[in-house]
Length: 247
Image (tube, rainbow, N blue to C red; front, side, top):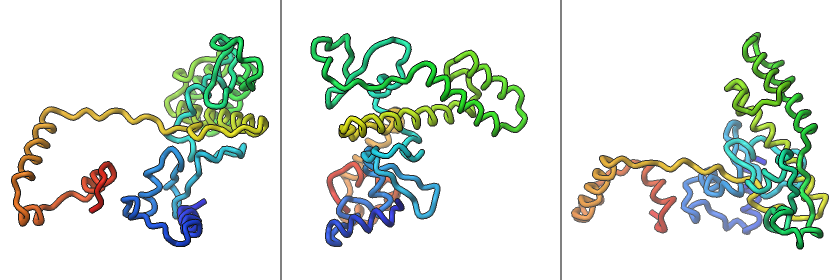
C-alpha cells in the first residue's frame, strides 16, 4: 500500500487522533522510518509504498522487504543448509537441531531445508534470466555459466550479479518459509525479516574534541546567546530521534 493509504488507516483506527508529531516525526514518511523492523519503505515511487514486515502470509513477497535486509539467521540456516544433513525444527520461538534436543525434538515441526537439486534449479533459473539481460559481455556470461555449472560460491559471480542473486535467493527462502508457517498454522516470528546491522561509525579524536568544545561553549552561553544559536536541521532531527524531549 502507499504511505497515504497507511496513514488513512491509522487515522481511522485511532478516530483521527493519530499525529506524526506525537512520535517526534516531522512527516509521515519520517514516522515510518522509525519502525524498520515492522515496515519496509520503498521511496522509488511517488507516493512512497510500504510493506508490513510482519505480514508474511502471502507467497508473493515484495522486493522492498528484502533490499538492505536479512532473514533471521537461525531460520536462514535451517532453510538453506542442505550440506550438513542436520535436521532443523521450530519450537515456537527459535530453531533447534536434532543434535541439541534429540529427546525433545520428535514432536516439533520440521523446517523444510532446500535440497541440492532445488538449489541447483534456483541457480539455473537465475543464471538464464541474468544472462539474457547482459549486453554481449562474453566475460560476464562465462562467469555466470561457470558459477552455475560448477556450483561455485556467490563471490565467483560478476559484481553486478552478486546482489541480484542474493536478493533472489532471499525471495525464494522467505516465500518458502512463509508457505511453511501458513501450512503448519503457525504464526511466523515478527523478526523473520530483519534490518541489516549498520556498520558502527568511528568518531575521530578531532571530532570528539570539537564536540566536547562545542558542548562546553553551550553550557557557558546565556539565554540570549542560546536563542540566537543556529543549529543544522539534520542535526536537530537526529537529536530529537534519539532523545526523549520534543522541540
